[in-house]
Amino acid sequence: MTIRLYDTATREVRDFVPLREGRAGLYVCGLTVQSEPHVGHVRSAVNFDVLQRWLRHRGYEVTFIRNITDIDDKILAKAADQGRPWYNLAYAMKIELDKAYAALNVAPPTYEPAATGHVPEMIELIERLIERGHAYPAEDGSGDVYFDVRSWPTYGELTHQGVDDMEPAADADPRGKRDPRDFALWKGRKESEPETASWPSPWGRGRPGWHIECSAMAGKYLGEAFDIHGGGVDLRFPHHENEQAQTRAAGGAFASYWMHNAWITTAGEKMSKSLGNTLSIPSVLQRVTGAELRFYMVAAHYRSHVEFSFEALDEAAAGYQRIVSFLDRAGVTETGELPDAFAAAMDDDLGTPAAVAVLYDTVREGNRLLAAGEDVSAAAGAVSAMLDVLGVHPADRAWAGAGASGAEERLTAAVDALVAGLLDERTQARADQDWARADAIRDRIKAAGIEVTDTPDGPTWSVS
RNA sequence: GGUGGGUUGGCCGAGAGGCGAGGCAACGGACUGCAAAUCCGUGUACACGGGUUCAAAUCCCGUACCCACCUCCA
Image 1 (cartoon, protein in one colour):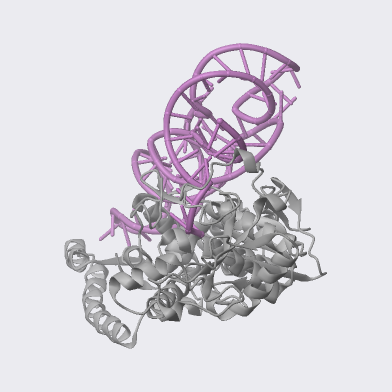
Image 2: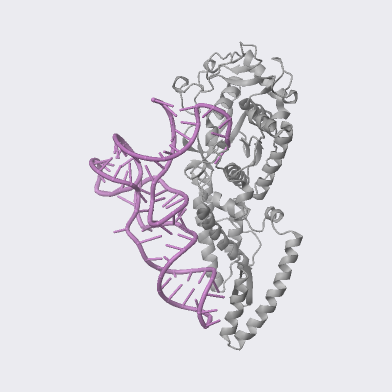
């Protein structure tokens, strides 16, 4: 069975055929570290994390590159506003981003290159473009270098647009461009910008344009031809279109497959920094766990819009808890076989919704066996295997970091001791068939926010 | 103006010509001293109008509404 993926460039689901047998090179545009990450950002990371896990599961040796854009207009502007060095802001936000990834069990990529560490590679690429007649230094002496859109006949192929149909850039300031759609490869340093935010180049001090970063870094770590390029749909144009044009104009083949994940919207609108309707990861994690949030995202298909709501999030969390509770009661920790239907769903363009349906079916079957007192090891093992692929296994060590600290464990032990005393009393009352007293004790415990459950092995408690 | 995507039951969310994915909620039943959990059962959903077909939520034509990209954006 081969993996099939929807390729945005050809607009169809195609068999995944890697450039090199048994290997997969994956490049995903990471974030510009200018502010706290929100749930929308993390959706992209979670989606590609699932892709990576599935490719590995299918036996591919994956090289996964996710970059960090740590220099750009917004970073400079925000840092100036906050009165601190731009690299200080970028680093602080990078730390926040890492925390968010860790909280959602997003595995670190193979390499995580930062733009500022690859300026020489970018300059080299720009020089090559100039030599080949696809780029030119600005004619106004600003020190900018632009990509010449008209010199590249297939410009617009990724997003199926004709250059003449595009609305000219609204920034209006042509700054020595031959065509308003030409985009900056290199930005000459402006007086107002800090010296530290510029690097020497053949065109004077300056800093790289956004698009060239990804071309340079993808080329360095994956080669100028690689398998899959991913990112959010909003990056299709201009960012991905430009990346592809640059690398191809410089002689590379670039990505064989393009994958784009859809939005998370709130109140019908895209969640974005500019609209100011973002939900930061820490705020959402006050309500649900990282595993629950990840499960919510993974239960929808990556190409579908998700209208974020706390109601839907709670529903997903409730469903997830059912799965977790099955695993708890099964008491089986070994990972078993992945059901064929689950694998088939995953092979079909990462069909996580159908895969999750298989997960629930298996849980139901497992609960049935459990009730019948039969062997559940196969079902529980399958559930574990599926949760592993989706990156939401409750026993995953990733959750431990965010979970119980030593202090919390001591607190749990203390509560347990107190509740255990009450439960002993209640057990005695039940043995005496004094139901009124038994229920009164249970109500009292419940009033403290603790749910009591009777099982054949005696009562247990959990925080409700 | 150009380019994409969407509209599915109380809610979330799959599917893409032919047995109503799955989840959450609700209701009934089993189990339980009563609960909880779990299991079993219960729904005639596919924006609207035409058309193609033995058969359409799925294909075609048209209409309405929503969203995104073309400017920094996962």
